[in-house]
Image 1: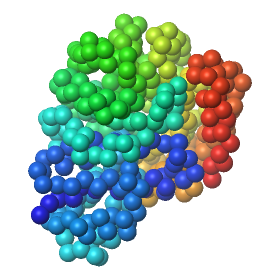
Image 2: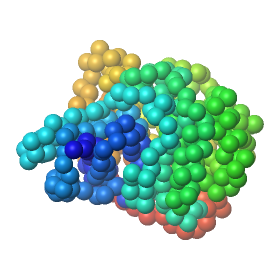
Image 3: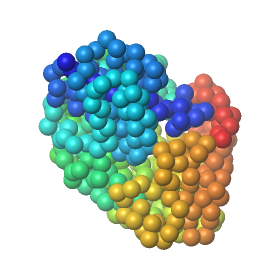
Length: 411
Ligand code: SF4
């Protein structure tokens, strides 16, 4: 008898027409959950491109005593989006097999205490990096590891602590090194450092970087990780680069300083943003700038300030999101108290789904926020100054890929 640990496949619903540009993420939490049980099988429906029927057929040959569906991705927000897919799957399995099915949508164990990630139990060759992460590289190989869980900060719109059931906790840096050695030995060099915040002054972040650089892995690997404008400095950025961190994602969120300060702990000005972006570029690290439209105080003028800041920073990639209001965040409680009609279903939460339900601000409807987001995407990625920068950084081929990306019509 064995337990079957399943990652549901909801990619088509979540990403609609842009699913081929999104990553296929390594299900690290699922692998660690399964590790606790000697006799267990992992079925990653997304990586194996299985539908409901595909899962039922796979289970035919396994003697099962329990099925565990993990309704989450590598990021906490994914658990909201995937919970419906997991529930549909639970009903389908229960209709065919007489076996208990459990849906987990929170981490109910401490992954920092589970040792190395059992990559040998995953279909490693099937994971795929984000399009931008692989720019300038030879392949889309992809793997993930982590050095910490949860986050030392507390931003109003964020629900990470709710997902992890935990405050900030670190993992032994030697385990991270061990994981990356295994990934590289399997031919995987594009790596996601899953930490909610990896780039910060912490002795264990330093230790991870020093271990990777000392082994020469920094020359080989292409890590992307999250950073904050107020947690990096020149020396740290240079150390990260030596360790193979070639992409950092910053939450810049708004171009309006008052709006940003109202939502995030840790206050930084636009001048501070500009100087850190320059410092990061000087360290030869590419940047993903993350921006949000639809803060409660946003107006058409402040959303334009955000887009203008993004264009002036000219990062190698920019994500433009509508505000997401997730249960478990302070923002969710605030919006409920204001009587805002909030998304309920997973598709209403999915930013790229035709059924996405954007939330309004006090001055702008949700529909207008979403229209501005789509306009921002096109204006940013079609900007001649941006495309010229990308040609000089990654070559003409990547600029052509970006042109193809902006030609996709989002419903
Ligand atoms: S820094 Fe990022 S992960 Fe941490 S609380 Fe803020 S939004 Fe969440």
